[in-house]
Image (tube, rainbow, N blue to C red):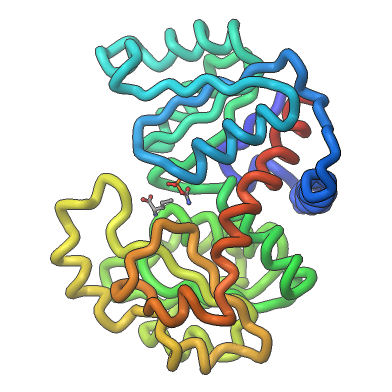
Length: 298
Ligand code: CP
Ligand code: NVA
């Protein structure tokens, strides 16, 4: 049994397999062809944080694959009243075939997985968001071709998304240029996951130089709302502007996992501009996760 708590739960070849399968499933879906290998299968989804894309893509994905998804908000379940994660894991995983969890501490996911009889998928933790980067890689391949040897610029907070990009760089062999202000840079342990592929920059424009992909995320992630004012001050020079995009390479694309804060981490003109592939990127959550669900169920 396999879990998908981080990209590093897969080999590079397995990630490439998932990306190829995601493209096939996208094509089938576009052709209106039914593909229901998960008939009778159930996905349990535990959400401790808000979501639009993750919930809808997993729920729609399971329906399209012939299965069913159950939504469980922590506040409405016994988890929210203190039932131990280990007990919840042993109960839920006897009833469903796969579990997806969105939570705060990554340790919660690891603890759940340790007690789970079913594969567990990380639907976002404070440490990583592998489903999103899987969809982002699919989007990159569609627009720019293979990612090995290419350059990705991450502008902004060294958060769960940045951390997952570091893992991807080490696994798939592309250069990752990270621009972040002091106090918000990835620590040495995190950077080491990228091997010699990761370079840190103070200057956002320098990090974007020659990049094939420029990507960013909110300055304050879920759970950091109280730091919004401090973060706005710290990240003032880390907005993805049209001027910054002009430093990127020919044919460069812009991605954002969404939701986006226009005028903070990205200018509206970039988000809505010709280099932005954010809507395709959001749609690819559906296809990439269907590939993942199918693979974990095999
Ligand atoms: N990008 C992403 O995971 O979006 P949601 O928070 O809406 O699920
Ligand atoms: N870094 C963001 C991603 C949201 C999809 C957060 O954790 O809130």
